[in-house]
Length: 222
Length: 249
Image (cartoon, rainbow over all chains, first blue to last red; front, top):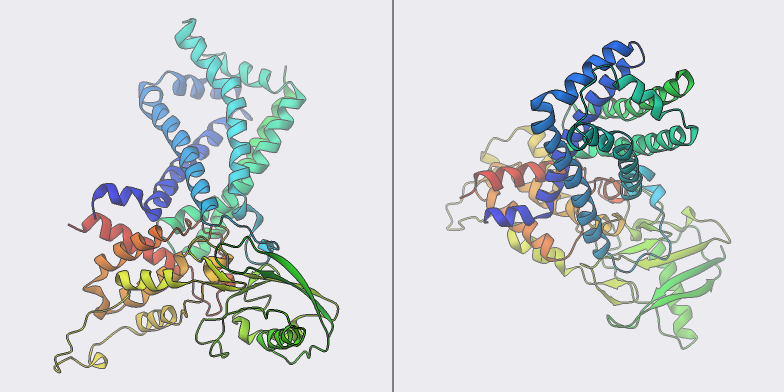
């Protein structure tokens, strides 16, 4: 089989989906770790944010890879979903999905769409202003601005509510996605039971942590 | 028991088809589901109506012929059984039961509840075999030492009867559990290793050609499989496929 044939196969697509998911889950963990610093120290948060916002490796190597991974994950998700819908063009009159699978596993598209909408808001809130600040208006760098900008975004209770709802959907997405990614790359062995527990903890604790951060800054903004 | 059956009727492959309602009385809880269908068909014939076409053969859970989606589940609400092993005691008097064919692009409907599952045969033909020189000097398989766990896992995979419940249950109509069982039963044994790369590549290619969906690891196939084929087989097939893709010429 040719290499191009490999890239077209259903298994190859699933593996590619899983690899992008692994990258995004690692990114999410580091994003959470940095954001959680804002709960304890404004100056430490500013210092780490300044480093992340100005470091060449982060800005010009990891950030493009991240954007590629996000776009790839969503596009491949839609491609897989479209093909899967075609595989059963006539639906069952009565379907009892709850009898054999979780809601999360059957609705990854919808939880993913909410996360996509959230990313739009998140980019509008933080990423686009950051790009404008640095590369369009070319404003002088102020290493102490990050904590204030973060708190400012969480003044509006509607925005905090949208963030919280999105994080709940992120948790539901991860509750299936974490272990599904391992299964897709063929990792199903004696460690799977432990990995499932770890995956469940990851899927709940990380989004919960983000919710705590959003509410904390809403209640403690200056 | 008195039941209301809502059954998918479809004249042929090109007919649009639809649900029709049939009341049925005097159903014994000791009947198998297929015996209940036999009673319904006798009732329909006596009324001068067309009986419901459905697949069946051994009626012992071995052949994999019976293929009904009952109340939204492949082979009905019981676990580890085929439709022929499902008993009416699983239902209550007054119940309404929806009976539909297994639905997938890869399983076109022939008539009513009968679907064409020859896609599975074509996948098997693509690589689900071991080539053996039958010159008369063939080594006795029992003379080859095989670890007990490998033999057990290969045997478990080989219990797949190819009924198609995995496809029917999967929200994506994916055939990965079936194909992975057929790949695993050989991949685990020394006799199957010689053709392992070609087997997995060809079987997956044929599976994709047949129009089955992608596995999204919902696990519905494993739950509904009458033979309890494990998702571990899908993971094993993914590994076999990746290995074969990277290291094949």
